[in-house]
Length: 296
Image (cartoon, rainbow, N blue to C red; front, top):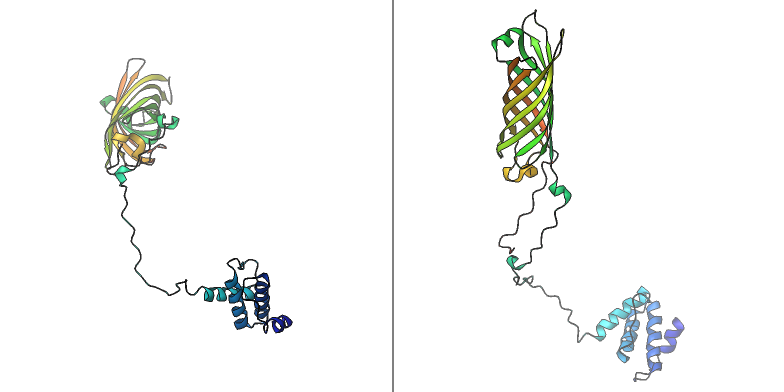
């Protein structure tokens, strides 16, 4: 490298853009940059890039120690056309949009799937408590309790129907009486009259049958009719059915049960139900609202 510098530095190449002059300055600049003679390297690079526009180096193909002097010479050679003075100015403001939200197209909603037409289910577990209403029944049996289970399917936003299964145990009122088991099965329908953030208010009806199973004696078949008023919390939006209802709710029902035996006898019970409802279809996301002023 030192021989190249000693040989080429004293020699003045032709001023014309010939291949000899171009190679002279390029070799001198490379050798001087390798020897850390940066001033000489930058002068040679400046003369080299001034000969031809095509005299350029690539950062990917040039060692950094050489490329640094080349960039410095290139900036010095173009000093008259480059504006490197720093300036501080306000951030440019964006122009106001030329299209309003109302002018944007509104895509059509997607096609309804099978799930959109499907019915949701409501599973309820409760503890029924019953009191005999007739004086003859009260002399034999006291307040009873049991366990109930119902599974309903939503038909409309305010009507459900399904199966109701429950069992009651009528405790003896005196030591001379025997306990009585009442397994009951029937069809259940629930109507939601009003609903909102405060809860749901409605009515239900169970129609079915069962049996009266005494500890001693024959079993008697029964027909059952049981209307009741109900309140559930939290509720949902009546207009949208279960779409805005909570997936879990507690409820209370106050009603009446008529038991008709096959031998012609009947019993009347006041019934209180306390339980919880599981609504797997509740709590689904609400459909997005349209933008204000959007065209449809």
